[in-house]
Amino acid sequence: MQDLSLFDVVVLAGGLGKRLRPTTGDAPKVLAEVDGTPFLDILLKNLYAQGFRRVILCTGYKADEIEAHYQKNSLGLEIIFSKEETPLGTGGAIKNARDKVQSPIFFALNGDCFCSVSFSDFFKFYQAQGAKASLVLSKLENKNDFGSVVVDSSNQIVSFEEKSSSSASPYASVGIYCFDREVFDWMPEAQAFSIETEFFPKLVGKNFFGFITENKFLDIGTPERYKTAQEKLKNK
Image (cartoon, rainbow, N blue to C red; front, side, top):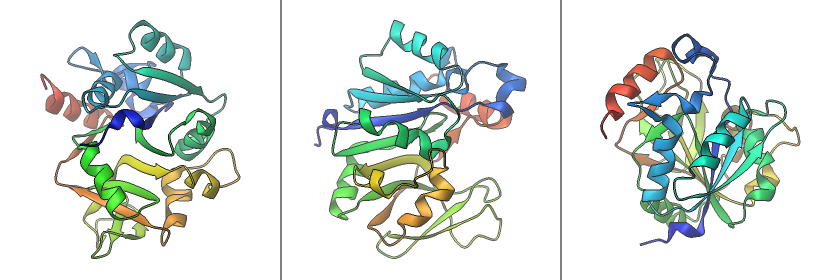
């Protein structure tokens, strides 16, 4: 079994969460509670249970509140904070954490999504494919809500499609990634950018693979999805 303590995990936790504010107020989105537990705690406890020990939290909106929360209880993890002074987008936030990432291969994930994935199996797939970058993919239930990812017969990613009910691909990214550090050199020069729309399409053809899971993913981006996540994750 792979020793996951050897790998850093970059967690995106800087979102504004504007769509969620009617439900949670102005609190950081990642600290929205599920059955009395902050959503990000659930993600971090899962990382710890699977063997990870070093996490870089990319903070932005209400960063001090998030830092104070984990300074009180780090959940057994070494947590390093990578704070953005201005919104950098999902790609810019990961790029901003470059100097804090120590492992030659690292994982990254969205702090407002949850999918039950074996990171050990994900890494074995990444290794077996000789990948430089890999995404976890899950089947879409509503194609209008998410862009889709097209893979070939070897699970190499060949294209991305915008949100559309007519998409030919049944798969979407669940916001969990595995990267070789080399990808930092391929990122845009701009400080702020979206990893999904401004970076991933440029990786097509560069040993870029999709790891498919049968498990569904949950996110808390809207009041409706937050309610669903609360129902699905309660008491788990």
